[in-house]
Image (cartoon, rainbow, N blue to C red; front, side, top):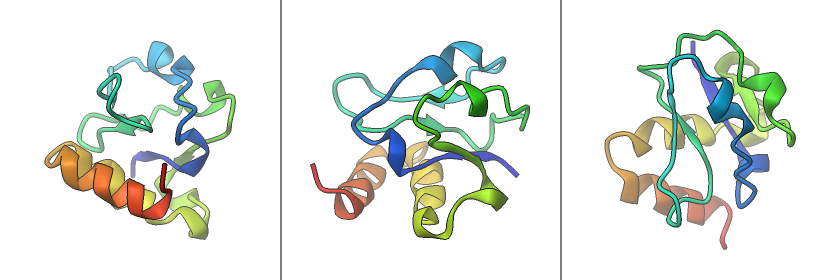
Length: 95
């Protein structure tokens, strides 16, 4: 299991979650990305990030609302192919 950042973060990108993550697994490219990404290989499932998010965008993978299920692969893809993740996000939620 890992945590997933979903649609409420898009174009908000409050970084409160980043500062509380004990393993620094939340990433983004400033000025390029529209959402923050949790690395599923680095996340230790501690849950520290979830209560810090002011827009309630962070969910345990198994609790992610069905309407945001597409954000699970987008989060994972970003760590291997940032352009593909950004294109998938833009297709879901155009700028």
